[in-house]
Image (tube, rainbow, N blue to C red):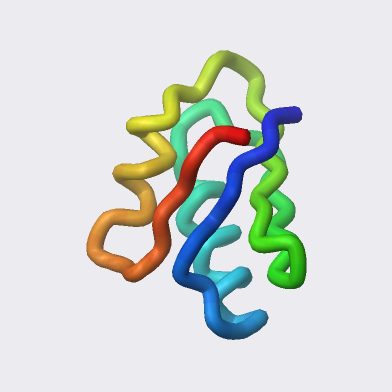
Length: 67
């Protein structure tokens, strides 16, 4: 499992949106977003690149960075 910092989330609904978008990335098996910690925990079958995760959040106010 890899941990990422998410910026731009203002509510728990935002966390749900981030979870939904990241879970659609090829290879991702599980995503859990902790709104209070502003973190995303991502499990995958194979290596998933940060640019692929960033692309999933394009068009939103959210940014993702590896911890």
